[in-house]
View 1: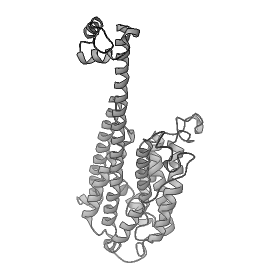
View 2: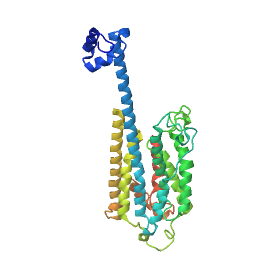
View 3: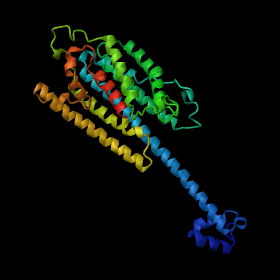
View 4: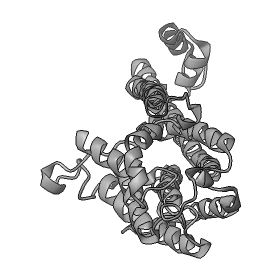
Length: 352
């Protein structure tokens, strides 16, 4: 006897399974009632179900790890923002600029109609923790866009109030419109606007458009830096304090975009997702490099000098295109949030 099997039954099971371990597992079932074939079939089905559960667990772990790593990269963009801003503002204002950027990361959005403070996530959907962190990183990025628009012109308390309001009341509402299942802009919502809604991949509209228009309002409210356009001071008096810092900040922002764009697939558990993530990483690299090279030649055509410091990733193109406007408008800033982000949000949102 082997478990619930007679010697003859054990031999039959062993012949079918070709494994003593499998035969012993089958014989642990009620073979006398089920019969050899049904017992083997039941054991096989249980093995397949166990494999499926393990595959789901691996898929969950893989996608969650990928999403969290992408969110970490997006958060690292705050270091890029900080170094970039410290490089383009004057040395006397570096400490203030860094303080405002750090404060932008402390907000937490709570507006919604369910899962308040992630109360339901523990039991129903633990993945929401990763999604919360992912959206927090997006919210911080959208909020920080304004920092350059009001550089050297706003107090810490003003930025404190702005970042609190932006992360608590504005970003959660706008992101809910676009990405929530019942959002009126979500294309998967049958009641979406115009019956089609809108597609926002990687925050084209939610992050750039919202951050860009916040920058526009901020720059209009604060006006230009004192003496920027109404004095005889040379333009060199307003040059940034450290080119090395904003170049380093640019590369950190570039690195962060590999979390922003490829990470927006939210997972890599199958061939199609992995291919999409890879393609998006390549597109991010090519677009950034192309913008940098084009800007280098565009700047040379304007200044007749090879100014490598003007090549600050994709925003450089907008800087050069808007250069004539820089000389006359008092509402454009050192961080390019106004000329860059609203245009990107509108243009790419419309293309999608």
